[in-house]
Amino acid sequence: METVRAAERELMARLPEGALMQRAAAGLAAACADLLGRVYGSRVALLVGSGDNGGDALYAGARLARRGAGVTAVLLNPDRAHQGGLAALRAAGGRTVSAEGGRAGADGGEAASDDGKVAADWGEAAVARADLVIDGIVGIGGKGGLRPDAERLVRAVRGIAVAVDLPSGVDADTGEVRGSAVRADATITFGAYKPGLLIDPAHTHAGALRLIDIGLDAHLPADPDVEALQHEDVAALLPRPMPESDKYRRGVVGVVAGSARYPGAAVLAVSGALRGGAGAVRYVGPAADDVISRFPETLVHTGPPAKAGRVQSWVVGPGLGDGAAAKHSLDDVLASDVPVLVDADGLHLLPAGSDLRKREAATVLTPHAGEAAALLGVSREEVESGRLAAVRALSERYGATVLLKGSTTLIAAEHQPVRVNPTGTGWLATAGSGDVLSGLIGSLLATGLPARDAASVGAYLHGLAARRATTPHGAPIAAYDVSTALTDTWRDVLA
Image 1 (cartoon, rainbow, N blue to C red):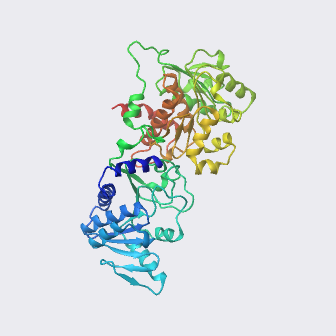
Image 2 (image 1 turned 120 degrees about the vertical axis):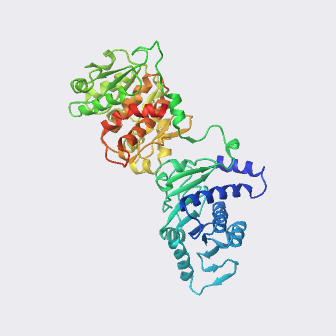
Image 3 (image 1 turned 90 degrees about the horizontal axis):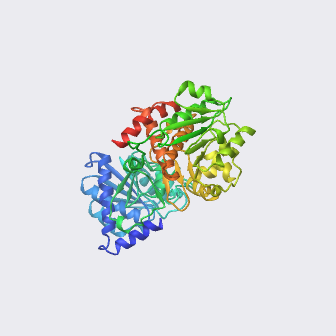
């Protein structure tokens, strides 16, 4: 987060003192008012730490108090609370409670307590009664989980929880959560999305995200550490056939998948490939009858891949098995001079530490957390708790573009910003959905998209298709439902 802090320092040097915090507080107060619906007569509690997030919360609380809300600030470190924010809140009629053993009224006068627990109870009661609680405990520089006094107050929240910039207790840089952390219903962030807001496990703590423009854009670097494609980005990348195109010029994707035990993996991978923009799909493997019976337009071959015919990309691995024939197919495909996507069983067969930079064309690896752990030689828990570090390590170690599947899908390529896919849904956690994704990305590779773009666009469309398939109210879906929704999803993105 040093890039954001540096941008803030540069902007603050050009503005009157306190102006940047006032911008943030105004946006925060407006967002809280929207969430409350009716500000007058509502009860708002502020959880105030010693940093600038606490100041943002206090100034926002003052604005809400002036609109008729009853605002109480619970100060976790009264001696280090933002003095300007405290003065503004008290001037607006807000009250403060010290979590350490004292209470203050609108005039700022302290009311002593013989029992520190009584003061603590005042703070918990204010939080429990509040319609909305603003988390201003720690900011983007915070490391580790919440301290016990903060954790106790957070447990008392019953109303809407709104985090200032990011939920306290999560790591802004990595998305890691090392201990207790706030689970917000909404996070109001300023200037730029912090990586931790987009990456699990921290992403699940953030709730709905709202970005407030405070004028940082001109002071931020052109290349961020993490980025997320939006509709217009994906629309610009989608391949479009030209008037003179034929099926071969549009690209042919080869799919090496399926086995006697898992013929459905071949069918699902082909279903994704048929809807990814390539002009033809060439299937190689033992599930040809199953594939042809579902998709008669598929070109089939018994193998080996090198003798199946010309392709512009390969997908290898889904349902392939772990025998000698499967290993030979993987080696055959990796020896080709076209882009290759390796998934599922192909990842299990990939020799640990393989340097895929030696290939003449790009390689895309698409592991889930367990497969990523095996490739890195670490535990699954280590991957899941540090997804950003894991996807970067995989890309650097193997010299490949890596798509790490999961609740938030990440795409990493060497020396480029990591991309976070914003379109996923929990309903995608179903057997075979990864096979559809592999075929889809492989097809995009065959059209000529670079590996990082193909993986990013594929993940984006895949997530949107799942959302379309499960709408309007959310319901279980099967992997094939996702593939059939891809055509309409593609159309929506271009609309």
